[in-house]
Image 1 (tube, rainbow, N blue to C red):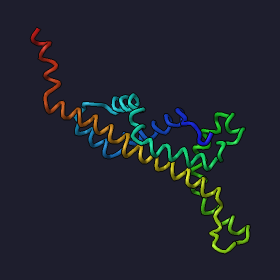
Image 2 (image 1 turned 90 degrees about the vertical axis):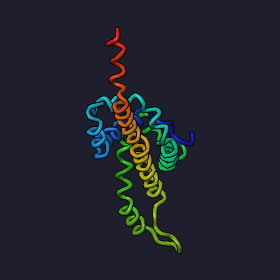
Image 3 (image 1 turned 30 degrees about the vertical axis):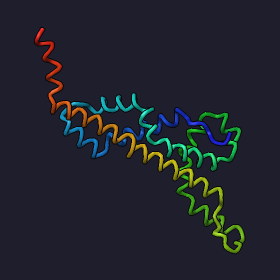
Image 4 (image 1 turned 120 degrees about the horizontal axis):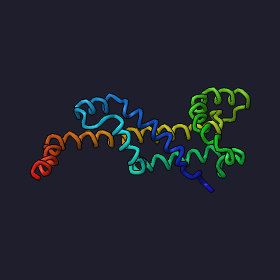
Length: 180
């Protein structure tokens, strides 16, 4: 296997965190205020959760790039045997990658100090670079999910509600009931 399979659990956890971040953003909060109660925060959240597959499809390119980078960081066969068997190891990996990426400058310094330099070498450890690449790819995927997936979806639902209210759709639904 050249790259790990997408984890529905991982996608779900990231999606919910990004969704909460989007719902708390000034842009969405302002749109909620303008919509004048057409949707509550929880109603928007529920709609987004139902549309998760479509929303995440909008950033499939970034997700595939993240999977490739993660595969490169963990080796051609994926994570080590023990990590594949233990379910918690995958969850912790998602937490460890950003930490390792932050530690990249320190790792580079240590690697440079411990081995002799050859001409033209920058002293970087390939492992540190691939881990940092995986962390960067994950950040790019999450940012794309927020900016091109979740926020536009939420704003679109609120815009539809505003347009419907402006056209009087709520009132037109009531007319047939009154006419009976």
